[in-house]
Amino acid sequence: MTTEGSEDGPAGPLREALTVCAAAGMSGTLRVTGHPGGAIHLVDGRVVAIETPGAPSPEVLLLRSHRITESDWDTAFAAAAVAGGRMSAELIAREMVGSGELEGVLRTALADAMFVLASGTVEEYRSEPGPVDFVLPVEPGAETEWLLAETSRRIRVLASLPDRYDLNRVMAAPGAAARPGARLVESQDEILALADGRRTPRDIAFALGQGVFATILQLARLREADLLVTASRRMTERDRREPGHQAPGDEPGSPSKLPRRQRDRSALLRNPKTAELRAPLRLLQPRFGRSPGSGETP
Amino acid sequence: MLSSLTEALRQVMAFDGVRAAALIDIATGMVVGSVGEQGTDFPAAAASMADEVRTARGVAGFGRLGGDLDEISLVTKGRLHISKVLGSRPGEGMLLYVDLDRARVNLGLASLQIGRLAPAVLA
Amino acid sequence: MAEDKLLAEIQALRDKVTGITGTAVASRDGLIIRDDTGGVDPDNLAALTATALALAQRLVSEAGQGTLREAVTRSSGGHVAIYAVGANAVLVLLGDEGLDITRLHYESRATIDTIEALLALSSSESAAG
Image 1 (cartoon, chains in turn purple, red, orange):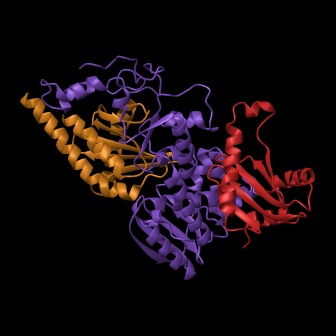
Image 2 (cartoon, one colour):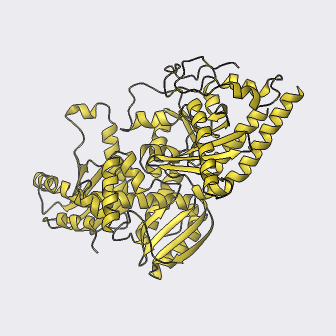
Image 3 (cartoon, rainbow over the protein chains, first blue to last red):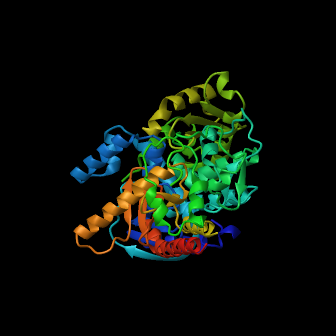
């Protein structure tokens, strides 16, 4: 595999470190500090799991996508804990997921996590030989050559996209040209609902229970079709509350509504008569399920 | 320990004329697992196969012309490329991609055999 | 405006710590001061947060374990982290399954101090006006 120009950043040293660990047949953890950072777990020089806040774990992928129900997961987890056995064996034995399918999900999660680590910033890394404890390891572990080649491919694909998709900084907001009937991907409606200008591609991936790279590709296609715009900074709910941005279904009492009393509350802080923050606030009793409009004034 | 995925793909290799078989993640175009003869351009070919599937799925009204996408066949002078769509979550599903020698197999028969075996790859 | 600085401070924490999906600052009485909760009802969240903080503090005190640093709840769908901000306010952070707890420990302290200062400034400004 030739070294790509786009990999001179964090991926370069990380690639070297991982290759060294693999060549030594290391069992243990390669800890990566940085943003998002994470831990690469190896057994006999093969990668069995990668933990990072930047990419959904296999558990998130399986549960959030509703591939496995939460109660099934809990049952298998408890059984594995009691028997001291493996979670993967329990899931397969209970026919909650096929062994080939599970292996596919685990390898997909592994490649996604590696891609996220390599695309982020790496401050330092250190190898910690020792036993590896992870709930759903890939068995047998993935070869580092395969993992690194796939990572390079993903970074190349990302670089070839017309817009720059930073995993943690670029936000997606609904595009002005949203056309009814235009259908690009199966989960288009879901992803458009989640791209609210507050979430990063990583946040959307977690919410949907799918990979970050897959999410970026979907966002890029939606962007190309003018169904999305990208924002350079994170919008707040207040930005979205401006006239014209208010959701049509936003009525008091609906659980998904935007906060309706914000302006009044903020005024409390500015009110010249408010000698002390606590005094007037104490007069307002917090209520559950109050009727709209109540509790507005002290 | 043997990979259950590799084992399942080896079953596909047992068919006459099969040169290579792979499981491809449609959402990312990644080769999840593979067996057989693969050139250096295999990952790129796999990614474009996934693109084909997405394109076919994206054609307006495609689904209404008789159900969801099931298979894509690509025929070249010397080879048959059969890609069977396997429903799987999370993501957009997986693809069982099989590269066959055209001189040794018949498209209809190969498609039928691969279709029968496909679900076993994820099982 | 102090409240905009407050929001900016919370946003900065969001950018530093991976996995935060929503934030709110509330009074100890359970009333919202500033929020960006991402669809979660801020009023209910504020009320519950204030109650949970009080309970966690009593629990820690009963166990003779000193001062409460943070109260973190982990569930199948994410995390809720609660921090005392001075004596009068509370900060609540909502996170998904991938919330970077380690970094949160590290980054939250400075954010809380800043929020506390901003709130103090806000009350004294109000008093002066």
